Image 1 (cartoon, helix red, strand yellow):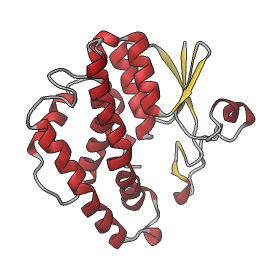
Image 2 (image 1 turned 45 degrees about the horizontal axis):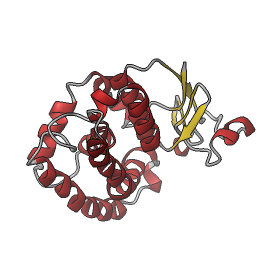
Image 3 (image 1 turned 60 degrees about the vertical axis):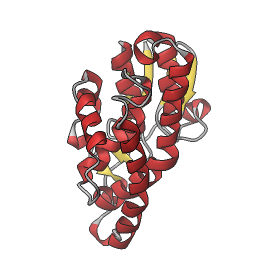
Length: 222
């Protein structure tokens, strides 16, 4: 059975779990984290799940981050790589139409999410959710909110011409930006209407993997 080390409220772990649902892959989730546990973030006094600082884990993932997978001896870290691997191994038809061009188009939006959206969202969720009140900086929130808007508008314009990021059909490329944008919307920050992006989110919300692993508010707001 596929083993996944991570935590439900890690947006990177959510990507892998959602991909598993889409690919119909059975897995075991092993709680692991240096910063969070069942009682929340360490900044608020919660104890982390741990595991990631053990020699055994670091032998698999020298970064000590989550998620990491072991798929019958295939050990991988970095969530986009894991998602693409699972799509190619278990469900190429459903997750990129078994088409190299579609996979490439999907991949560019997956990696764009990591460079253009994720840095801002990390700061925002820390400032708005995980840091204690005395550690938060409203000016930092406002700066990062403004910085994120152009990227969200890029994605909104892209989705004006197609229902999903890689074209007419859902693909693995929708998973990373789909989870990240959902977190942005949950934070309820000021911004433009982003009507195409919101329509895309409504389509994603109909998918079982999204409902199970991304939609629960507690997977983002703690």
